[in-house]
Image (tube, rainbow, N blue to C red):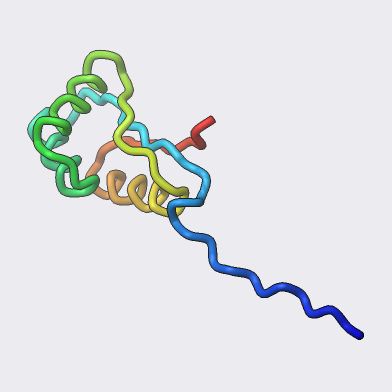
Length: 92
């Protein structure tokens, strides 16, 4: 009697390994533009976007969001299209 393989169940988004999306400071873009872009792309409230922008401005880098890899890479591309430097890395 043959044993049939167990069908694969799709992986849920909340079970995917987490990736960090990191905003890097630059000397080109104005703070207001960066805040507006974070609000638009990450969907956070204005105060949180301002805090993240100021953190990147002062320390050089700020964590924007932790999400799954596909969304992190999409956000990286979207920020690049707005002339902002964002990188991704796996959360350890």
